[in-house]
Length: 318
Image (cartoon, rainbow, N blue to C red; front, top):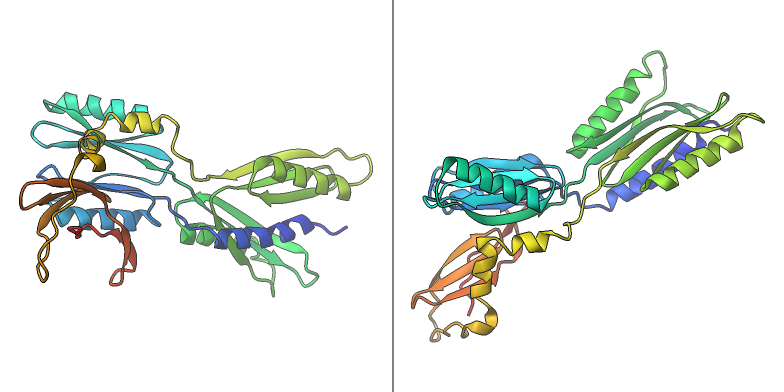
């Protein structure tokens, strides 16, 4: 009986799938004392999200501080009072986030308006550490799931696996990791236990049961003992666009439709356009020297100094 063969085969898929993902699962909001805020979503790491949001805020506002953050799939809502004070709330749905932001704002300030809403899709890291004996069969394993960073998941998996090898010599643990939707199912009978890792629950359970039934003693009944699910990113709910349309950002977009404005002035040769930009993440409004405004979407560029992606909000068009 080739015990635990299913685990070893599944681990190959886990490692390959994990290597193909871009892990974007952190959001942070920074706000300054002048009423400016910067919201960053889909960052690779929570601490990096906080640092980038704070740095971008400090470029345009004094006394910036982090006022909200999350690594879960959730809506981030901002409400702003008449004096520029910003309230941030994070909830599972856009509607709940909007209502909570307005309620908190009205409890402390006057003239509150629903300013903006963002969506963080979330997603967690999973890691699996295993140790095989000289015969190629599994000696020890540890599964760590729902972690916010790859390093933390891998460290936890390795620690758990290593602890199970305290009395075993000549055997070492190796670790594989992945991000997003992964499910580990365990099925057992009185004579055999099987494991399966897949990207969906139904396939994981079916695979674990199939292996258990094939390897168990005749007459032994197999059942699912446990299922551990790692969190996948969650797409924006259908209601997001409707809630976004109620924000001041959306209303500003509507008043600055491309069809409702002329092209920006073309400067004489050798001169450059002069403008100021006001941006919420990559959604920007240019104001030219003659007072005309123009809505535009800033591109994301790689900062060679920090090796992080950021919004390039410096353009005056033309």
